[in-house]
Structure formats: C-alpha cells, structure tokens
Length: 100
Image 1 (cartoon, rainbow, N blue to C red):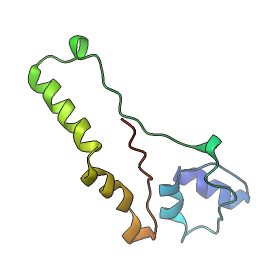
Image 2: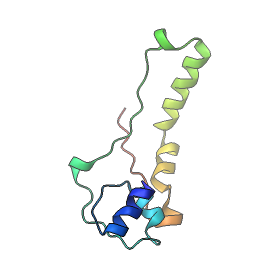
Image 3: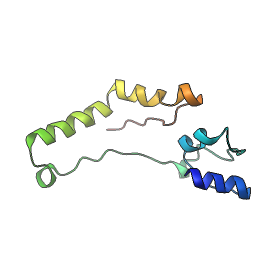
Image 4: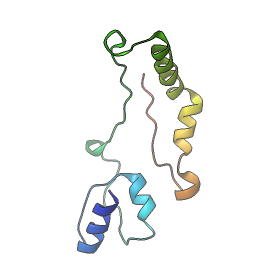
C-alpha cells in the first residue's frame, strides 16, 4: 500500500488504503482522509475454523488451533488489538469486532 499512497501523493489523486499504512506515512506525505467509516468500505478480518478431520494430522494440532482461536477472542487479545498503534500513531490501527 505504501507505493500506492506515494503515487496518490505525487499525482494528487484519490486511492483506497488501510489505516495502518496511512498512519505510518501521514507525516511523510501530504494526504488527507476524504471518507472513512463507510460500511461499504469495511475491511473485516476473520478467523475461520478448518475441517479438522481433513486438514489436521494430530490431536495436538487441533488443540493448538482451538487454543489460539480462544485466545484471539479473549479479553486480553481484544484489548491488545484495541491498543495496537495508539502509542505510535495516536489511534488504534485495528478495531476489534469479536463475534464468535
């Protein structure tokens, strides 16, 4: 995304980007946000549980996957996501949406 933002700056053009890349470059490029928080532009990250019977070769792998999924939905992980980037950029880079 960084090269796209640099090109938009050079051409004085519009582009779509993610918040993390924009914030990382905002002090280097004279760009402004024209629109944000539009539901049609929502970029959802998801955790998808795979078919363990077909893809997991051991009980240990299944347990590790389930442990990671449970951790990602834990209060600790959600708080880490909420705070990620705040110190460096003044706002979070991601907004958690923990729907299990």
